[in-house]
Amino acid sequence: MISNKVDGYIEPIVCNGDIYNYKMYMLYNGIEPCYLNNFPETASFASYFKRKMSCRNDEMLFANTYGLKAKYDDQDSMLSTITGLDNIDKSLVSLICACTNLDIQADLTIHIKDKDYPLVRTVDDKKYVSYNLTDLSDKGLSDDVLLDLSLDIENLKRTKILSQKRRY
Image (cartoon, rainbow, N blue to C red; front, side, top):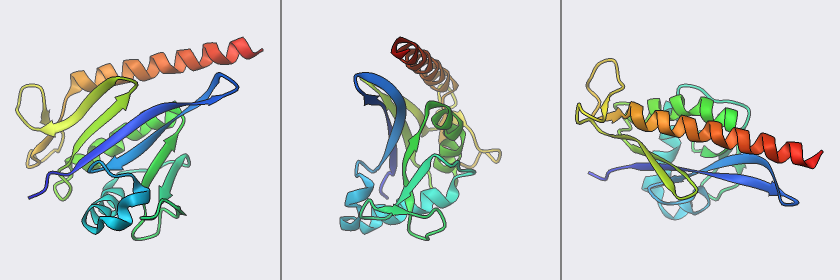
């Protein structure tokens, strides 16, 4: 069985040398949504992953297998990007829930600059514990990694605010 992976890359949106905002773009099994038309099995996984997310917000952009904007309601659309640190932060729980879903069972890693945050991995009852209430999921969450990621996201928020203050 193929081990599915979801990666989120958080990057700044820079305008005139200042950080305007941040976005997180998604890769599924190492493939960007615009190339998933060549990989039907991964495209199917990505769209199924979207349907298993527990919630969504207005700053989530959904795409088809060619990377073109699509509606959330489209059966084969997938999560492509999330804009704004607050939205990214709020979306983490939904991404974790989807990865630990019994039908999905995927690893989840968030990347910021040169740091990797492996949030969801195989349950080992030490670092990664079951996030699923039934304890049937093979995938679990690391609270320590989630805390480190949350702290780094807060640092990015402060950096963005300082960047905005310099503009005025």
